[in-house]
Image 1 (cartoon, one colour):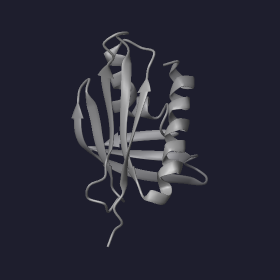
Image 2 (cartoon, one colour; image 1 turned 90 degrees about the horizontal axis):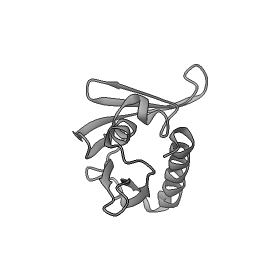
Image 3 (cartoon, helix red, strand yellow; image 1 turned 180 degrees about the vertical axis):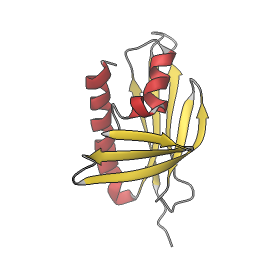
Image 4 (cartoon, one colour; image 1 turned 45 degrees about the horizontal axis):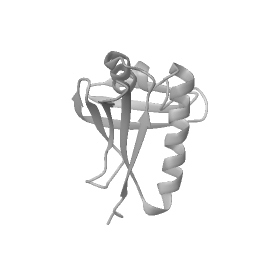
Length: 134
């Protein structure tokens, strides 16, 4: 039996008005490897995320892409996740007033891991800001 995970949602404003730049950051190997993992590879509808150096201690997780709608969102499911209702989704939307974009991140964690998942996303978004200036 698997434990039910809790959904978390994070909104993050970006300093960019270019849908192409944002879409590239959230949906491609090159974009994702700038802020979510040290290395990201895409093959046959699946992303491989690698943290750490490939030739020494590292962690690797794969996720199957469930949905990818250009200039809207990408949704994937971690291959090792047994909760049928959990997924990772990164959605982009335009802010009416400024014309800038907002990232909407939906992720899932067990109750005891929710705080650390928020911390991980804070770190990822810091990396995004440092790597891209967004």
